[in-house]
Image 1 (tube, each protein chain N blue to C red):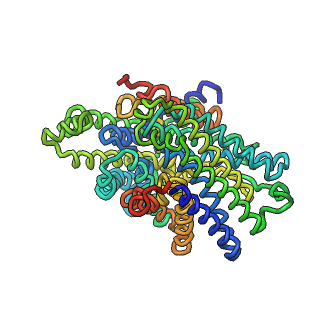
Image 2: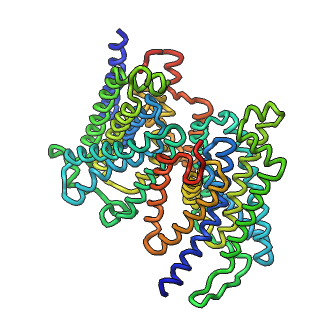
Image 3: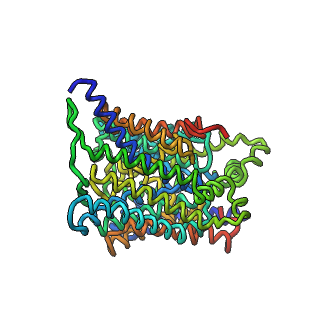
Length: 313
Length: 292
Protein backbone atom coordinates (compact mmCIF):
# COMPACT_ATOMS: atom_id res chain seq x y z
CA UNK A 1 0.00 0.00 0.00
CA UNK A 2 2.65 2.45 1.06
CA UNK A 3 4.79 1.03 -1.75
CA UNK A 4 2.59 2.81 -4.29
CA UNK A 5 2.87 6.14 -2.49
CA UNK A 6 6.63 5.81 -2.26
CA UNK A 7 7.02 5.15 -5.98
CA UNK A 8 4.62 8.00 -6.77
CA UNK A 9 6.69 10.40 -4.67
CA UNK A 10 9.97 9.43 -6.33
CA UNK A 11 8.54 9.56 -9.85
CA UNK A 12 7.01 12.95 -9.08
CA UNK A 13 10.41 14.22 -8.00
CA UNK A 14 11.92 12.96 -11.26
CA UNK A 15 9.22 14.66 -13.33
CA UNK A 16 9.66 17.89 -11.38
CA UNK A 17 13.43 17.80 -11.98
CA UNK A 18 12.87 17.21 -15.69
CA UNK A 19 10.44 20.10 -15.93
CA UNK A 20 12.77 22.38 -13.97
CA UNK A 21 15.70 21.55 -16.22
CA UNK A 22 13.76 22.17 -19.42
CA UNK A 23 11.95 25.31 -18.29
CA UNK A 24 14.69 27.12 -16.40
CA UNK A 25 17.13 29.33 -18.34
CA UNK A 26 20.44 27.86 -19.57
CA UNK A 27 22.55 28.82 -16.59
CA UNK A 28 20.36 26.97 -14.11
CA UNK A 29 19.81 23.98 -16.37
CA UNK A 30 23.60 23.55 -16.62
CA UNK A 31 23.82 23.80 -12.85
CA UNK A 32 21.06 21.26 -12.53
CA UNK A 33 22.84 18.89 -14.91
CA UNK A 34 25.93 19.12 -12.73
CA UNK A 35 23.86 18.60 -9.58
CA UNK A 36 22.19 15.51 -11.05
CA UNK A 37 25.53 13.95 -11.99
CA UNK A 38 26.88 14.64 -8.48
CA UNK A 39 23.61 13.32 -7.03
CA UNK A 40 24.16 10.06 -8.92
CA UNK A 41 27.55 9.87 -7.21
CA UNK A 42 25.79 10.55 -3.88
CA UNK A 43 23.22 7.81 -4.61
CA UNK A 44 26.06 5.31 -4.93
CA UNK A 45 27.79 6.64 -1.84
CA UNK A 46 24.57 6.47 0.13
CA UNK A 47 24.06 2.80 -0.74
CA UNK A 48 27.40 2.03 0.88
CA UNK A 49 27.40 4.57 3.72
CA UNK A 50 23.77 5.33 4.45
CA UNK A 51 22.24 1.89 4.02
CA UNK A 52 25.09 -0.51 4.71
CA UNK A 53 27.10 1.59 7.16
CA UNK A 54 30.33 1.42 5.14
CA UNK A 55 31.94 4.79 5.85
CA UNK A 56 34.41 5.08 2.99
CA UNK A 57 36.84 7.96 2.58
CA UNK A 58 37.97 6.70 -0.82
CA UNK A 59 35.03 7.08 -3.18
CA UNK A 60 36.93 9.70 -5.16
CA UNK A 61 38.95 6.85 -6.66
CA UNK A 62 35.81 5.19 -8.04
CA UNK A 63 34.56 8.53 -9.38
CA UNK A 64 37.94 9.22 -10.97
CA UNK A 65 38.17 5.65 -12.28
CA UNK A 66 34.90 6.24 -14.13
CA UNK A 67 36.14 9.59 -15.34
CA UNK A 68 39.40 8.21 -16.71
CA UNK A 69 37.74 4.97 -17.80
CA UNK A 70 35.51 7.02 -20.08
CA UNK A 71 37.90 9.87 -20.83
CA UNK A 72 41.02 7.93 -21.79
CA UNK A 73 39.42 5.84 -24.60
CA UNK A 74 37.68 8.98 -25.84
CA UNK A 75 40.95 10.90 -25.81
CA UNK A 76 43.34 8.26 -27.11
CA UNK A 77 41.11 6.34 -29.51
CA UNK A 78 38.19 8.70 -30.18
CA UNK A 79 35.45 6.52 -28.63
CA UNK A 80 31.92 7.94 -28.57
CA UNK A 81 29.97 8.72 -25.41
CA UNK A 82 27.89 5.52 -25.23
CA UNK A 83 30.71 2.95 -25.08
CA UNK A 84 32.85 5.36 -23.04
CA UNK A 85 30.15 5.55 -20.37
CA UNK A 86 30.12 1.75 -20.16
CA UNK A 87 33.90 1.48 -19.78
CA UNK A 88 33.67 4.17 -17.11
CA UNK A 89 31.04 2.17 -15.20
CA UNK A 90 33.12 -0.98 -15.55
CA UNK A 91 36.25 0.81 -14.33
CA UNK A 92 34.44 2.05 -11.22
CA UNK A 93 33.00 -1.39 -10.48
CA UNK A 94 36.27 -3.24 -11.04
CA UNK A 95 38.25 -0.90 -8.84
CA UNK A 96 35.59 -1.23 -6.14
CA UNK A 97 35.86 -5.01 -6.36
CA UNK A 98 39.63 -4.85 -6.05
CA UNK A 99 39.81 -2.24 -3.29
CA UNK A 100 36.77 -3.62 -1.49
CA UNK A 101 38.00 -7.21 -1.38
CA UNK A 102 40.98 -5.95 0.63
CA UNK A 103 39.44 -3.07 2.57
CA UNK A 104 36.40 -5.04 3.73
CA UNK A 105 38.64 -7.25 5.83
CA UNK A 106 38.68 -4.24 8.17
CA UNK A 107 35.85 -2.26 9.72
CA UNK A 108 35.14 1.10 11.33
CA UNK A 109 38.04 3.52 11.60
CA UNK A 110 40.46 1.11 9.90
CA UNK A 111 38.11 0.82 6.93
CA UNK A 112 38.02 4.60 6.63
CA UNK A 113 41.80 4.85 6.65
CA UNK A 114 42.37 1.92 4.30
CA UNK A 115 39.97 3.36 1.72
CA UNK A 116 41.58 6.78 2.16
CA UNK A 117 45.04 5.30 1.56
CA UNK A 118 43.99 3.33 -1.51
CA UNK A 119 42.39 6.45 -2.94
CA UNK A 120 45.58 8.42 -2.28
CA UNK A 121 47.66 5.76 -4.00
CA UNK A 122 45.26 5.87 -6.95
CA UNK A 123 45.40 9.66 -7.18
CA UNK A 124 49.20 9.61 -7.02
CA UNK A 125 49.32 6.91 -9.70
CA UNK A 126 47.34 9.19 -12.01
CA UNK A 127 50.15 11.74 -11.57
CA UNK A 128 52.90 9.15 -11.89
CA UNK A 129 51.66 7.82 -15.24
CA UNK A 130 51.31 11.34 -16.60
CA UNK A 131 52.28 10.33 -20.16
CA UNK A 132 49.01 8.48 -20.33
CA UNK A 133 46.75 10.47 -18.07
CA UNK A 134 47.85 14.03 -18.75
CA UNK A 135 49.15 14.30 -15.16
CA UNK A 136 48.40 17.40 -13.17
CA UNK A 137 46.86 19.32 -16.07
CA UNK A 138 44.41 16.60 -17.06
CA UNK A 139 42.94 16.82 -20.53
CA UNK A 140 39.89 18.02 -22.39
CA UNK A 141 37.61 15.32 -23.76
CA UNK A 142 37.50 15.86 -27.55
CA UNK A 143 34.18 17.25 -28.79
CA UNK A 144 33.95 14.50 -31.38
CA UNK A 145 33.67 11.99 -28.54
CA UNK A 146 30.96 13.92 -26.75
CA UNK A 147 28.16 12.69 -29.02
CA UNK A 148 25.06 10.60 -28.27
CA UNK A 149 23.02 9.54 -31.33
CA UNK A 150 24.45 12.52 -33.18
CA UNK A 151 23.50 15.02 -30.45
CA UNK A 152 26.34 17.06 -29.04
CA UNK A 153 26.52 16.74 -25.24
CA UNK A 154 28.11 20.17 -25.02
CA UNK A 155 24.77 21.83 -25.86
CA UNK A 156 22.48 22.77 -22.94
CA UNK A 157 19.40 20.65 -23.62
CA UNK A 158 21.03 17.34 -24.63
CA UNK A 159 23.44 17.73 -21.72
CA UNK A 160 20.66 18.20 -19.22
CA UNK A 161 18.62 15.34 -20.68
CA UNK A 162 21.61 13.00 -20.51
CA UNK A 163 22.31 13.96 -16.89
CA UNK A 164 18.65 13.53 -16.00
CA UNK A 165 18.53 10.15 -17.74
CA UNK A 166 21.56 8.88 -15.84
CA UNK A 167 20.17 10.12 -12.53
CA UNK A 168 16.64 8.82 -13.18
CA UNK A 169 17.92 5.36 -14.02
CA UNK A 170 20.15 5.41 -10.95
CA UNK A 171 17.31 6.54 -8.70
CA UNK A 172 14.88 3.89 -9.92
CA UNK A 173 17.44 1.12 -9.52
CA UNK A 174 18.45 2.36 -6.07
CA UNK A 175 14.83 2.55 -4.92
CA UNK A 176 14.09 -0.95 -6.21
CA UNK A 177 17.27 -2.19 -4.55
CA UNK A 178 16.59 -0.77 -1.09
CA UNK A 179 12.96 -1.96 -1.17
CA UNK A 180 14.08 -5.46 -2.10
CA UNK A 181 15.17 -8.32 0.15
CA UNK A 182 18.79 -7.37 -0.47
CA UNK A 183 18.01 -3.84 0.73
CA UNK A 184 16.90 -5.25 4.07
CA UNK A 185 20.12 -7.26 4.22
CA UNK A 186 22.05 -4.01 3.76
CA UNK A 187 20.25 -2.31 6.63
CA UNK A 188 20.65 -5.41 8.78
CA UNK A 189 24.43 -5.28 8.22
CA UNK A 190 24.47 -1.64 9.25
CA UNK A 191 22.40 -2.16 12.37
CA UNK A 192 23.88 -5.38 13.70
CA UNK A 193 26.38 -7.36 11.71
CA UNK A 194 26.62 -10.21 14.21
CA UNK A 195 22.89 -10.81 14.18
CA UNK A 196 22.84 -10.69 10.39
CA UNK A 197 25.57 -13.31 10.34
CA UNK A 198 23.51 -15.47 12.70
CA UNK A 199 20.60 -15.24 10.26
CA UNK A 200 22.77 -16.85 7.61
CA UNK A 201 23.99 -13.78 5.75
CA UNK A 202 27.60 -13.71 4.62
CA UNK A 203 28.54 -10.16 5.66
CA UNK A 204 31.78 -9.99 3.67
CA UNK A 205 30.15 -11.06 0.43
CA UNK A 206 27.09 -8.86 0.85
CA UNK A 207 29.20 -5.81 1.70
CA UNK A 208 31.46 -6.47 -1.27
CA UNK A 209 28.40 -6.62 -3.52
CA UNK A 210 27.16 -3.30 -2.15
CA UNK A 211 30.58 -1.72 -2.60
CA UNK A 212 30.77 -2.89 -6.23
CA UNK A 213 27.30 -1.47 -6.92
CA UNK A 214 28.36 1.74 -5.22
CA UNK A 215 31.55 1.76 -7.31
CA UNK A 216 29.55 1.35 -10.52
CA UNK A 217 27.33 4.29 -9.53
CA UNK A 218 30.41 6.40 -8.79
CA UNK A 219 32.03 5.27 -12.04
CA UNK A 220 28.95 6.18 -14.07
CA UNK A 221 28.83 9.58 -12.35
CA UNK A 222 32.52 10.19 -13.06
CA UNK A 223 32.16 9.11 -16.69
CA UNK A 224 29.08 11.29 -17.15
CA UNK A 225 30.90 14.24 -15.58
CA UNK A 226 33.80 13.82 -18.03
CA UNK A 227 31.53 13.43 -21.06
CA UNK A 228 29.05 16.18 -20.18
CA UNK A 229 31.46 18.84 -19.00
CA UNK A 230 34.41 17.87 -21.16
CA UNK A 231 37.27 17.87 -18.67
CA UNK A 232 39.19 15.09 -16.94
CA UNK A 233 41.71 15.93 -14.22
CA UNK A 234 43.51 14.32 -11.33
CA UNK A 235 41.97 16.81 -8.87
CA UNK A 236 38.78 14.74 -9.10
CA UNK A 237 40.66 11.87 -7.46
CA UNK A 238 41.67 14.00 -4.46
CA UNK A 239 40.21 13.47 -1.02
CA UNK A 240 37.89 16.43 -1.54
CA UNK A 241 35.83 14.33 -3.95
CA UNK A 242 35.50 11.63 -1.32
CA UNK A 243 34.28 14.20 1.19
CA UNK A 244 31.73 15.83 -1.14
CA UNK A 245 29.39 12.84 -1.58
CA UNK A 246 29.59 12.31 2.17
CA UNK A 247 28.54 15.92 2.71
CA UNK A 248 25.65 15.54 0.26
CA UNK A 249 24.46 12.41 2.00
CA UNK A 250 24.86 13.85 5.49
CA UNK A 251 22.93 16.97 4.56
CA UNK A 252 20.18 15.20 2.64
CA UNK A 253 19.90 12.27 4.99
CA UNK A 254 21.94 9.09 5.24
CA UNK A 255 19.96 6.04 4.24
CA UNK A 256 17.35 7.88 2.17
CA UNK A 257 17.05 7.55 -1.60
CA UNK A 258 16.26 11.21 -2.23
CA UNK A 259 18.79 12.49 0.32
CA UNK A 260 21.61 12.57 -2.21
CA UNK A 261 19.94 14.93 -4.64
CA UNK A 262 18.68 17.22 -1.87
CA UNK A 263 22.16 17.35 -0.37
CA UNK A 264 23.89 17.86 -3.73
CA UNK A 265 21.57 20.72 -4.62
CA UNK A 266 21.90 22.23 -1.14
CA UNK A 267 25.68 22.12 -1.04
CA UNK A 268 25.96 23.24 -4.67
CA UNK A 269 23.88 26.35 -4.15
CA UNK A 270 25.47 26.98 -0.75
CA UNK A 271 28.94 27.06 -2.32
CA UNK A 272 27.60 29.07 -5.24
CA UNK A 273 26.12 31.61 -2.85
CA UNK A 274 29.23 31.60 -0.68
CA UNK A 275 31.53 32.08 -3.68
CA UNK A 276 29.58 35.15 -4.68
CA UNK A 277 29.71 36.40 -1.11
CA UNK A 278 33.32 35.65 -0.23
CA UNK A 279 36.30 33.85 -1.70
CA UNK A 280 36.45 31.80 1.48
CA UNK A 281 33.89 29.22 0.35
CA UNK A 282 35.97 26.31 1.61
CA UNK A 283 35.54 27.70 5.11
CA UNK A 284 31.78 27.44 4.74
CA UNK A 285 32.03 23.85 3.50
CA UNK A 286 34.07 22.99 6.58
CA UNK A 287 31.66 24.82 8.84
CA UNK A 288 28.69 23.10 7.20
CA UNK A 289 30.29 19.73 7.87
CA UNK A 290 30.92 20.52 11.54
CA UNK A 291 27.45 21.97 12.05
CA UNK A 292 25.79 19.00 10.34
CA UNK A 293 27.70 16.48 12.43
CA UNK A 294 26.90 18.40 15.60
CA UNK A 295 23.30 19.44 15.12
CA UNK A 296 21.67 17.51 12.27
CA UNK A 297 23.41 14.13 12.24
CA UNK A 298 20.50 12.49 10.41
CA UNK A 299 20.14 15.08 7.65
CA UNK A 300 17.03 16.72 6.21
CA UNK A 301 15.20 13.57 5.15
CA UNK A 302 16.37 11.71 8.23
CA UNK A 303 14.57 14.38 10.21
CA UNK A 304 11.49 14.05 7.97
CA UNK A 305 11.54 10.30 8.46
CA UNK A 306 11.79 10.64 12.23
CA UNK A 307 8.97 13.19 12.46
CA UNK A 308 6.63 12.80 9.49
CA UNK A 309 6.97 9.73 7.32
CA UNK A 310 8.31 6.68 9.07
CA UNK A 311 8.41 4.37 6.03
CA UNK A 312 10.32 6.71 3.71
CA UNK A 313 13.00 4.50 2.09
CA UNK B 1 78.77 12.10 -7.56
CA UNK B 2 79.63 8.44 -6.96
CA UNK B 3 77.03 6.00 -5.69
CA UNK B 4 78.34 5.86 -2.09
CA UNK B 5 78.19 9.58 -1.31
CA UNK B 6 74.90 9.84 -3.19
CA UNK B 7 73.42 7.14 -0.97
CA UNK B 8 74.83 8.91 2.08
CA UNK B 9 73.13 12.13 0.99
CA UNK B 10 69.85 10.28 0.44
CA UNK B 11 70.10 8.70 3.89
CA UNK B 12 70.86 12.05 5.54
CA UNK B 13 67.89 13.67 3.83
CA UNK B 14 65.81 10.70 4.90
CA UNK B 15 66.97 11.10 8.49
CA UNK B 16 65.82 14.74 8.50
CA UNK B 17 62.43 13.68 7.09
CA UNK B 18 62.22 11.00 9.75
CA UNK B 19 62.96 13.53 12.50
CA UNK B 20 60.24 15.98 11.42
CA UNK B 21 57.87 13.15 10.74
CA UNK B 22 58.30 11.56 14.13
CA UNK B 23 57.42 14.87 15.80
CA UNK B 24 54.27 15.26 13.72
CA UNK B 25 53.34 11.60 14.07
CA UNK B 26 53.91 11.34 17.80
CA UNK B 27 51.20 13.93 18.38
CA UNK B 28 48.76 12.07 16.15
CA UNK B 29 49.65 8.82 17.88
CA UNK B 30 49.11 10.28 21.36
CA UNK B 31 45.72 11.67 20.41
CA UNK B 32 44.65 8.39 18.88
CA UNK B 33 46.10 6.32 21.68
CA UNK B 34 44.50 8.16 24.56
CA UNK B 35 41.32 9.57 23.01
CA UNK B 36 40.68 7.08 20.16
CA UNK B 37 40.17 10.11 17.93
CA UNK B 38 41.61 10.15 14.40
CA UNK B 39 42.44 13.81 14.02
CA UNK B 40 42.31 14.65 10.33
CA UNK B 41 43.05 18.31 11.11
CA UNK B 42 46.46 17.33 12.49
CA UNK B 43 48.26 18.39 9.30
CA UNK B 44 46.66 21.83 9.60
CA UNK B 45 48.03 22.24 13.13
CA UNK B 46 51.43 21.50 11.58
CA UNK B 47 50.82 24.11 8.87
CA UNK B 48 49.67 26.68 11.43
CA UNK B 49 52.91 26.15 13.36
CA UNK B 50 54.91 27.01 10.24
CA UNK B 51 52.76 30.00 9.36
CA UNK B 52 52.95 31.38 12.90
CA UNK B 53 56.72 30.93 12.76
CA UNK B 54 56.74 33.14 9.67
CA UNK B 55 54.63 35.81 11.36
CA UNK B 56 56.89 35.74 14.40
CA UNK B 57 60.00 36.03 12.22
CA UNK B 58 58.63 39.20 10.61
CA UNK B 59 57.64 40.73 13.94
CA UNK B 60 60.69 40.00 16.07
CA UNK B 61 63.59 42.29 15.19
CA UNK B 62 67.23 41.37 15.62
CA UNK B 63 69.14 38.21 14.79
CA UNK B 64 67.46 35.23 13.18
CA UNK B 65 68.04 32.97 16.18
CA UNK B 66 66.04 35.27 18.42
CA UNK B 67 62.97 35.14 16.17
CA UNK B 68 63.43 31.38 15.86
CA UNK B 69 63.56 30.94 19.63
CA UNK B 70 60.44 33.08 20.00
CA UNK B 71 58.64 31.02 17.37
CA UNK B 72 59.62 27.82 19.13
CA UNK B 73 57.60 28.98 22.13
CA UNK B 74 54.81 31.06 20.58
CA UNK B 75 53.71 28.70 17.79
CA UNK B 76 53.17 25.54 19.88
CA UNK B 77 51.38 27.49 22.61
CA UNK B 78 48.99 29.22 20.21
CA UNK B 79 48.26 26.05 18.26
CA UNK B 80 47.72 24.09 21.49
CA UNK B 81 45.26 26.76 22.63
CA UNK B 82 43.37 26.49 19.35
CA UNK B 83 43.28 22.70 19.68
CA UNK B 84 41.90 22.98 23.20
CA UNK B 85 39.18 25.22 21.81
CA UNK B 86 38.34 22.72 19.05
CA UNK B 87 38.13 20.03 21.69
CA UNK B 88 35.69 22.04 23.80
CA UNK B 89 33.53 23.31 20.95
CA UNK B 90 33.36 20.20 18.79
CA UNK B 91 34.93 16.94 19.92
CA UNK B 92 33.55 16.97 23.43
CA UNK B 93 30.03 17.60 22.19
CA UNK B 94 30.34 14.53 19.97
CA UNK B 95 31.36 12.51 23.04
CA UNK B 96 34.49 11.50 21.09
CA UNK B 97 32.53 9.15 18.83
CA UNK B 98 35.28 7.85 16.48
CA UNK B 99 33.40 8.26 13.22
CA UNK B 100 31.68 11.56 13.98
CA UNK B 101 34.98 13.09 15.12
CA UNK B 102 36.66 12.14 11.84
CA UNK B 103 33.94 13.97 9.92
CA UNK B 104 34.09 16.96 12.24
CA UNK B 105 37.89 17.22 12.06
CA UNK B 106 37.66 17.13 8.27
CA UNK B 107 35.46 20.21 8.60
CA UNK B 108 37.94 21.81 10.98
CA UNK B 109 40.71 21.03 8.47
CA UNK B 110 38.92 22.94 5.73
CA UNK B 111 38.23 25.88 8.02
CA UNK B 112 41.85 26.21 9.16
CA UNK B 113 43.11 25.84 5.61
CA UNK B 114 40.78 28.54 4.35
CA UNK B 115 41.59 30.84 7.25
CA UNK B 116 45.29 30.49 6.45
CA UNK B 117 44.61 31.21 2.79
CA UNK B 118 42.58 34.31 3.65
CA UNK B 119 44.90 35.82 6.26
CA UNK B 120 48.29 34.54 5.13
CA UNK B 121 47.83 34.22 1.39
CA UNK B 122 48.62 31.65 -1.29
CA UNK B 123 52.38 32.33 -1.43
CA UNK B 124 55.09 30.11 -0.02
CA UNK B 125 57.31 32.23 2.20
CA UNK B 126 60.74 31.39 3.58
CA UNK B 127 61.82 31.61 7.21
CA UNK B 128 65.51 32.08 7.96
CA UNK B 129 67.36 29.34 9.76
CA UNK B 130 68.72 30.43 13.16
CA UNK B 131 72.30 29.83 11.99
CA UNK B 132 73.96 29.13 8.66
CA UNK B 133 76.85 26.84 9.54
CA UNK B 134 77.57 24.15 6.94
CA UNK B 135 79.14 20.78 7.48
CA UNK B 136 81.77 20.25 4.75
CA UNK B 137 82.11 16.59 3.83
CA UNK B 138 84.70 15.43 1.23
CA UNK B 139 81.94 14.98 -1.39
CA UNK B 140 79.36 17.61 -0.61
CA UNK B 141 78.50 20.32 1.88
CA UNK B 142 75.53 19.74 4.16
CA UNK B 143 73.37 22.19 6.07
CA UNK B 144 74.29 22.15 9.74
CA UNK B 145 70.78 23.28 10.57
CA UNK B 146 69.33 20.03 9.22
CA UNK B 147 71.54 18.09 11.61
CA UNK B 148 70.31 20.37 14.39
CA UNK B 149 66.72 19.43 13.45
CA UNK B 150 67.54 15.77 13.92
CA UNK B 151 69.12 16.46 17.29
CA UNK B 152 66.25 18.67 18.45
CA UNK B 153 63.62 16.15 17.39
CA UNK B 154 65.49 13.48 19.32
CA UNK B 155 65.50 15.65 22.44
CA UNK B 156 61.79 16.44 22.18
CA UNK B 157 60.91 12.80 21.71
CA UNK B 158 63.04 11.89 24.69
CA UNK B 159 61.19 14.50 26.74
CA UNK B 160 57.82 13.14 25.62
CA UNK B 161 58.87 9.63 26.50
CA UNK B 162 60.18 10.67 29.93
CA UNK B 163 57.02 12.68 30.54
CA UNK B 164 54.82 9.73 29.67
CA UNK B 165 56.69 7.14 31.67
CA UNK B 166 58.09 9.08 34.61
CA UNK B 167 55.70 11.90 35.47
CA UNK B 168 52.36 12.03 37.26
CA UNK B 169 50.70 13.59 34.20
CA UNK B 170 52.01 10.77 32.05
CA UNK B 171 50.69 8.22 34.49
CA UNK B 172 47.26 9.85 34.40
CA UNK B 173 47.32 9.85 30.61
CA UNK B 174 48.29 6.21 30.41
CA UNK B 175 45.64 5.27 32.93
CA UNK B 176 43.01 7.06 30.84
CA UNK B 177 44.27 5.29 27.73
CA UNK B 178 44.01 1.84 29.30
CA UNK B 179 40.57 2.26 30.82
CA UNK B 180 38.67 5.47 30.74
CA UNK B 181 35.95 4.47 33.15
CA UNK B 182 38.19 3.02 35.83
CA UNK B 183 40.38 6.14 35.56
CA UNK B 184 37.31 8.25 36.15
CA UNK B 185 36.32 6.12 39.10
CA UNK B 186 39.74 6.85 40.62
CA UNK B 187 39.01 10.56 40.46
CA UNK B 188 40.83 11.43 37.26
CA UNK B 189 39.21 14.30 35.37
CA UNK B 190 38.98 12.51 32.02
CA UNK B 191 37.66 15.58 30.20
CA UNK B 192 40.68 17.57 31.29
CA UNK B 193 43.06 14.78 30.27
CA UNK B 194 41.48 14.64 26.82
CA UNK B 195 41.75 18.37 26.38
CA UNK B 196 45.37 18.31 27.50
CA UNK B 197 46.27 15.42 25.21
CA UNK B 198 44.61 17.02 22.20
CA UNK B 199 46.42 20.31 22.88
CA UNK B 200 49.71 18.50 23.45
CA UNK B 201 49.39 16.57 20.18
CA UNK B 202 48.69 19.75 18.23
CA UNK B 203 51.52 21.57 20.02
CA UNK B 204 53.99 18.83 19.07
CA UNK B 205 52.93 19.11 15.44
CA UNK B 206 53.44 22.87 15.57
CA UNK B 207 56.84 22.40 17.19
CA UNK B 208 57.84 20.02 14.41
CA UNK B 209 56.70 22.60 11.85
CA UNK B 210 58.76 25.42 13.42
CA UNK B 211 61.82 23.18 13.19
CA UNK B 212 60.94 22.19 9.63
CA UNK B 213 60.04 25.56 8.13
CA UNK B 214 63.63 26.92 7.68
CA UNK B 215 64.40 23.86 5.54
CA UNK B 216 61.25 24.29 3.51
CA UNK B 217 58.81 27.22 3.26
CA UNK B 218 55.56 28.15 4.94
CA UNK B 219 52.56 27.51 2.71
CA UNK B 220 48.88 27.12 3.47
CA UNK B 221 48.66 23.67 1.85
CA UNK B 222 51.79 22.29 3.49
CA UNK B 223 49.79 20.30 6.05
CA UNK B 224 48.71 17.72 3.53
CA UNK B 225 51.91 15.68 3.25
CA UNK B 226 52.70 15.60 6.98
CA UNK B 227 49.15 14.41 7.65
CA UNK B 228 49.42 11.60 5.15
CA UNK B 229 52.90 10.60 6.25
CA UNK B 230 51.96 10.81 9.94
CA UNK B 231 49.04 8.51 9.28
CA UNK B 232 51.37 6.13 7.52
CA UNK B 233 53.88 6.22 10.36
CA UNK B 234 51.29 5.84 13.10
CA UNK B 235 49.59 2.93 11.39
CA UNK B 236 52.72 1.05 10.43
CA UNK B 237 54.10 1.58 13.91
CA UNK B 238 50.91 0.37 15.54
CA UNK B 239 48.25 2.82 16.68
CA UNK B 240 49.06 4.33 20.05
CA UNK B 241 52.52 2.81 20.41
CA UNK B 242 55.28 5.42 20.90
CA UNK B 243 58.22 3.14 20.18
CA UNK B 244 56.52 1.77 17.06
CA UNK B 245 55.86 5.31 15.87
CA UNK B 246 59.52 6.19 16.24
CA UNK B 247 60.76 3.07 14.44
CA UNK B 248 58.21 3.54 11.66
CA UNK B 249 59.20 7.20 11.26
CA UNK B 250 62.80 6.09 10.75
CA UNK B 251 61.81 3.37 8.27
CA UNK B 252 59.46 5.60 6.29
CA UNK B 253 61.74 8.65 6.43
CA UNK B 254 64.84 6.78 5.28
CA UNK B 255 63.10 4.81 2.56
CA UNK B 256 61.32 7.99 1.42
CA UNK B 257 64.72 9.72 1.16
CA UNK B 258 66.26 6.86 -0.80
CA UNK B 259 63.32 6.18 -3.14
CA UNK B 260 62.75 9.90 -3.77
CA UNK B 261 66.41 10.43 -4.59
CA UNK B 262 66.87 7.39 -6.84
CA UNK B 263 63.41 7.06 -8.38
CA UNK B 264 60.67 9.65 -7.90
CA UNK B 265 58.95 11.23 -4.90
CA UNK B 266 55.56 10.30 -6.32
CA UNK B 267 56.53 6.64 -6.53
CA UNK B 268 57.77 6.77 -2.93
CA UNK B 269 54.40 8.10 -1.79
CA UNK B 270 52.43 5.58 -3.84
CA UNK B 271 54.38 2.72 -2.28
CA UNK B 272 54.02 4.16 1.23
CA UNK B 273 50.26 4.67 0.98
CA UNK B 274 49.72 1.21 -0.46
CA UNK B 275 51.87 -0.23 2.30
CA UNK B 276 49.67 1.41 4.94
CA UNK B 277 46.49 0.10 3.40
CA UNK B 278 47.91 -3.40 3.26
CA UNK B 279 49.35 -3.25 6.77
CA UNK B 280 45.94 -2.27 8.14
CA UNK B 281 44.31 -5.10 6.21
CA UNK B 282 46.74 -7.86 7.06
CA UNK B 283 48.43 -6.71 10.29
CA UNK B 284 46.00 -4.31 12.02
CA UNK B 285 48.17 -4.09 15.11
CA UNK B 286 50.97 -2.52 13.02
CA UNK B 287 54.25 -4.01 11.93
CA UNK B 288 55.77 -3.51 15.36
CA UNK B 289 52.74 -3.67 17.64
CA UNK B 290 51.94 -6.75 19.69
CA UNK B 291 48.83 -8.81 18.92
CA UNK B 292 45.96 -7.91 21.16
